[in-house]
Amino acid sequence: YRYYHDPGDHDTRAHFGIRTLTHKLICYWKKDQWELFDLVKDPNELRNIYNDSAQQKLVAKLKKELARLKNELKDNDEFATAPPPAGVDGRIPGGKQQLDQVLPGAAR
Image 1 (cartoon, rainbow, N blue to C red):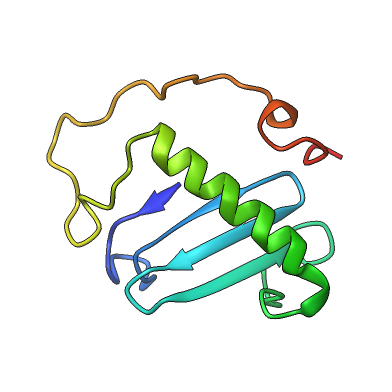
Image 2: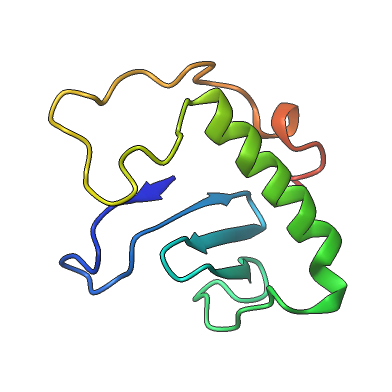
């Protein structure tokens, strides 16, 4: 996903990320900051575990999948500094893939 408003109505910095059933990885690209949340143990997203050494394999896996998705969806950061113009929304390529097809084991 990508959130364009900066800081926007919710006072949240522009960011993009990827979410599985168990984790959410977020990149605040203007500040080059990352967050990783365990959505099972921390459903309110209060503890950033991005820098936890035990999570580095998961971080690498999620970053790789995020890069793949950005490439597949042709997200080249063109709208990183300004929202896209009206009418660019459309159907997502490959739309209804099962999560396990994209990230094996993520649905567990």
